[in-house]
Every structure is written in structure tokens, then in C-alpha cells.
Length: 321
Image (tube, rainbow, N blue to C red; front, top):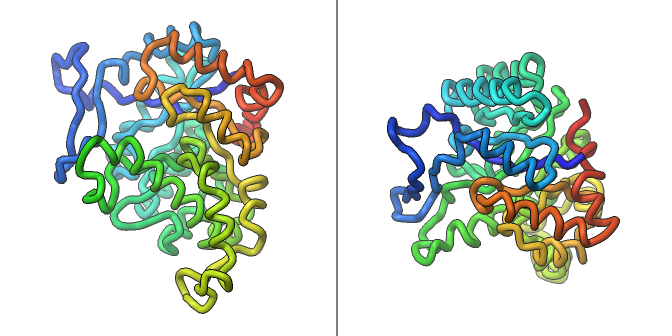
């Protein structure tokens, strides 16, 4: 069974009347491209058509508008996600959308999503409001997710906290978000989040931002004595176990983020174990044509038994019900 763990949609309410088939990319206040809106995001019939062509059995829906959003917007998106699951039985599941620093009200919504709506995971971004995933302020959120038995999907931030260095060439979307994911993996591990919450399950988008390509460097910088940071409160922190142990036992990575190019998957599995990777397409953002998604699925399957693991064998890492 193939489940697409990064499959985006946006409820029709967030589009202006008469939007039609146009596509529009919005820029943030710093003039950096942030997000592209188009009709495929709300055309769930087209999603089903793509899934049938590509051989995808089910998809877990997440909405960019609801990632770390205010409570009322989160509730609306959660309700529309549940409607999608009911309108297309067996084809769509949902991520809960809540703000991790939203306090008691957000946690009540998280509980509603788990117990009433049946969502098994919750989506947040790599950074928001100047906070990163290792900030102690998030500890109550991690604890609540652990208590409810919900996995956390960490998606790259749509607007980076420090965008100045990405002021041209669409750098924020092409590589800036990936840097943010790589940093989040290091912060979760060295910041002790995974040690403090031993039963927390975390899905990292985009193969960890392509972290495999720089793991040799990251491993070296775990040697605090060699690099002279052992006495630093911030830079000398180390987790309880070796860095790679968390990659091999605690984190789950998805195949989205590389626009359907299987070469990025192949280069990743040199470093990351295939039994910690799940399938994701990033439809309908980075890939929009059904044939392109099908090719991505076929290319992963052609890897062999390891590809079959990524396509369907590892689904149980995240979906327990």
C-alpha cells in the first residue's frame, strides 16, 4: 500500500471568487517568493485522478495556510480536511493543523483532531515567530503529541526568519528551506528534544533537506573537543547517543522536495537507512502532472527491494491505526 505523506491541498475558501485555473506566486514583505497558489490545490477530483494514474492508494493532506496558524484558521482547515476524507473514503487522511505555541486552546484542538477527527499526525514548520524546533518553549507541544500518540511532520518554513541572504534567484524556496530542514534535524538531536521525549515520532520533510550530502561534515562537528566548542553552552551540546543513532532509530524522512528526481533519493540512501524513509510526492506543488508522479513512483520501485520499502513497507512507522 502506497501512502503519500506529503500531499498538499488548500480549501476553496482561501481563493478569491473566480480564481479559475490561474497560478499566482506570492512574495513576502521582503520581496522573496513564498508560495504558489493554483486551482489544483483545491481540486480534489484531480488529486484522485493523479493517485489512480500513479498507483498511490492514499494521501495524508496538509495545508500550507494552516501550518503554525492561528486557532480559527486551524479549525477551519482541520474541518475541511476531515470533509475531504469523508468525501473520498479510504483515499485521504489528514494532518492536524495547530500552532505549537498556541497554549491550552491549541492543545484542545489537537486533542479534537486525534480523538474526534481521527488524525494521527500534526504538521508544523521548521521555524516560526523567531523560534526553532529546539526552543524549550515547544516542550509542552512535544509532550502533548507524545501523550496523544501523534507523530509530528516538520515541513520547511514558507517564510524564513532571516530571508535577507535569499533575496534573489528564488534561493529561499530552492535551497533556503532545505538549509532550514538540515538545521532542524541537528537541533532536534543536539538540542535533546528526542532524548527528553523518547516516544515522540517525527517525520522530516524532503529527506531532511538533503542532509545526507553533508553528514560527513556534521559528524565531524560532533567532536566538540577537536573543534574547541566543548565549553560553550550553546555550541558544545551533545545528545545522549551518537548522532547517527537518531537517524537510524528515531527520525522518519520522506522522499518529497526534489521535484520527482529519483537521483536525489538514490544519493540519500548511501547515508540514510531505507527502512526510515517513507514515500511523499509534494503534489501538487513541486510535481503537478499525474504522469510525473507515476514516473517518480516507478523510478523508486526500480531501485528494487529497498525502493519497495520506501514506497509502502515503512508506512507503519507513522500510521498505527
